[in-house]
Image 1: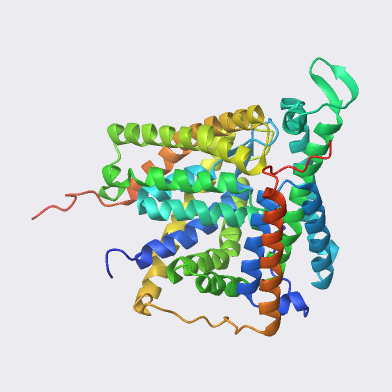
Image 2: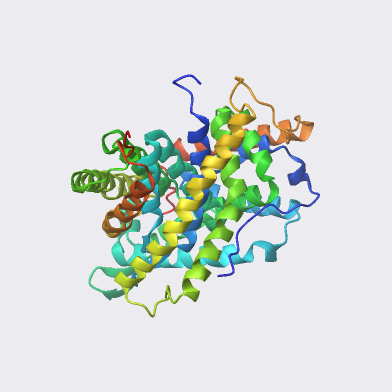
Length: 275
Length: 184
């Protein structure tokens, strides 16, 4: 169970030097834009920009390869599922049908369907680099500070920061418990029958959850003793002041966002229709 | 501490709860054999936390936990399902007052209440909200997302019914019962 997960990669690059707040705002604008639009031209344009930012950030391709493989497999399965369930979705959206070849019954391959699925895939490709970059270039404690800065209450920001802080701990606990139970003969693999496996999962869950509940008690006592939540505001150790580049980045992304919305909605449809 | 503020304990419960949610969501899913649909033990945990700490904590554990899980392990957030986690956590939490797990009693009647609530809540979430948002945000074909919602919803209901109830029973046993002290 070698757990590979995305985490902060320390490096000197223009993207790293932006404050967490800037990156968070840009990330939110970016994903909202990509989520709303189905315009192929915009998606392609955004995709190219995200690759450009990726190169600027000096993150190596191999460092995120494992996640990419995972996402590609998921995208592939998703695409197959979309086709199996709705081979005429593209025809329905674009209102025309250019048949390439028939398979059987309602299953044929049309240009519209291929174009529609290309759009869905492209949509992921525009969001994924931005999300990956955001995680690997933003320090976790700066992330919580940024949340607070954009208006999330500091109590909730602190909860997010706690979560990020304790994910590795809980993961270690989980692995220890799972190994201990397996050493006692509990089988979690595919060899065991399903009902038995569920029961076995419960016997790993129980100690993990009870120890986590204990952790909650300990931590909240410690925070209470230090007077957490006494004041209305809280300062963050890792918060940084805005630089020129921060204003520039936010302005740039806001313009991109507005242009995206205008182009997407000016003709009353989220889809770009080349047919 | 004023009433409208979150208590320290709730904040910590949200933080740690979200961390556990992330780990369980990633590692403690049992594959059923059908692609893309696992038995997610993490929803049993979410139900437990909602019952112990109430609707606000439950909802935020669902929101933060699910969003972080998607972000850290899959690189992109599937918003429509994150919203469902928020909803499930919050709505199950509404039953926390009437179940009152801290009293140490979790008898047949409460088990039935808990399960009726969780089935209704998850039906709303997985059969209605998740597919609708999938269509709205991702423009996916309707029959695909409704079938997906159906499979995931039913498997999660069963998971919460079996493992969730088991966990609640276990937790109730660790609380001291009302009137357990005798006057000598």
